[in-house]
Image (cartoon, rainbow, N blue to C red; front, side):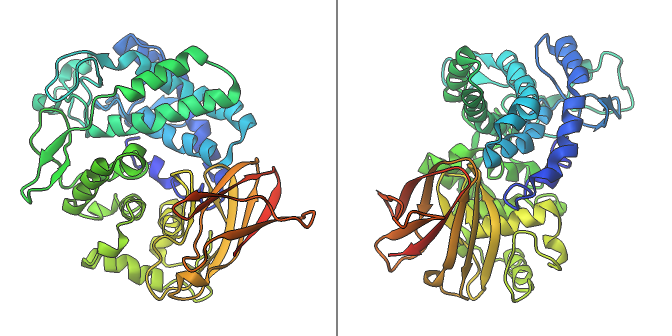
Length: 435
């Protein structure tokens, strides 16, 4: 549960196949009774703590507990959080999403330690203590029954492993957003805002290349060059580094620069989208990145679709589709951006890719010419504000027409930086053209 199971689902939301996540949600909900017992027994906390190896119907498999990783349940919350962010389905949130997310919130409200004088952490900040980055790095004391045949390295019981902090930076705003939509937990919302604002910073270290990169854990002067968990710093975790701070963005880019791109195949669904979200595709000239371009080139000439039939093998499945969709459509910043990183010379088309906020987006583009994007339609399932970065560099504005309409164009506001905004109505389709 520290990435293997969750990563299968990352691509399904943009691909508009959110229903594929249902078995995963069911399994997570089934684990709540066991997770509550472990959180209470081991840490005297409410909420849940999740073993590293679980089975359906709330069972644990190996008997090794969480293997020291307090982040397992938070990682398992990512598909559930994404379902809410991409669909805005309040009924689903109330019945399925929030019951699990609430357990994660309760645990971390309790588990985070405040105010300890750890080097590099501001006074009064919140840290995750006794928390491992990788598997089997915990003290034997974590297992009262004892496991004498296993070697747990005492030097690797961690403070602030980056995977936990990255997930919390992603999840706390989701807790706030979800409970606002449900009209519940106003006092806890204030607490989550406080925790999010005061989380200990991710550890940085100096790489041999003289680049500042994110380290693994507090107090370590090294990083793990072969750990696929590093790629989670860019996707799906740590939106802060991608959206709010230029220095963090550069550190994240530096970190990805020094990591093997596709470690053992495990990083494949995360590494390319991390690069794309950083708008860093053009700088990738190494052989591995060319491999991705080659796979893109093998997609049939009728263009890339949200659910490509007959696509190259590496594009099949949730992770692969996630890579394609990240290349074609960005919405995680709150602004819809079309075709941010399609390889030069590649035609592209897609129908009903899903953006954050429950928008279904379709468009097509002539090969190698971003300014020849056409047939742009956006269906607003839930209503609300649409923010679109115009894909037409040679045009000063856009025109938006609701379908069906009363002949009048929709009022569009220029937000600057080529971003345009309008208020959408639920269930309405909008045709967008350059003006």
